[in-house]
Amino acid sequence: MIARSLLYRAIFLYPRTIMHKHLLLSFFLTTATSPVWSQTHKKPATAAPATVTNKRPLKLRSTWGIYLSDTLPKTEVMKLLDSALVVRDEKNIKYPVLSFAFTYEKHEPYLNDTTGQPGIYKDFTGDNFKTASLSPLWSKGLKETLQTGDILYFDEIIIKYAEGKLYKAPSLKINVK
Image 1 (cartoon, rainbow, N blue to C red):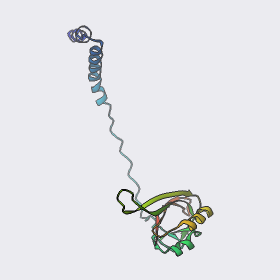
Image 2: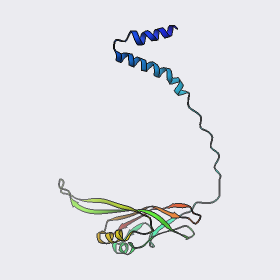
Image 3: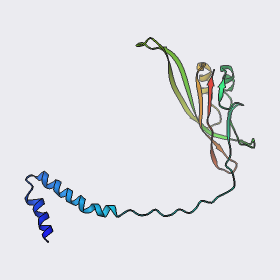
Image 4: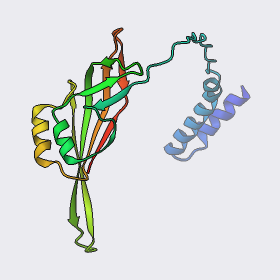
């Protein structure tokens, strides 16, 4: 009872402004409820142990035509633009490619106005494809604009496994020389 009367005096009688009253009231409410907040933590339930199998995961390898990630001459890349991505496992079994993300990194030289030094401007363009190869529009555009020093990225390659499962295959990076 005495504590209540002291609290009442501290909150309502002594503060000179309404702001002091609100600050003191909020301070007392937060300190009174903080022990309640600190005791609401529950211990996480123990997870069931994972089943261990002796089956190894697939080792997939992605290729474009017959090439893995590599530096290729421009003439060879031009021939590959109409080719499909191919994904195989360690037993050389082919899997159909369902989709992939393609990024084209174009390098353009320029002269820096402030320093007078030559530099290289990088421009990134790309698209997502729901097939195993580039669309005819992209293929035609790349045939017209591809230059040495450009880089082609094939990422997020998704394949369909024989059991109806989807897998993500390794990415490809083709440097044009």
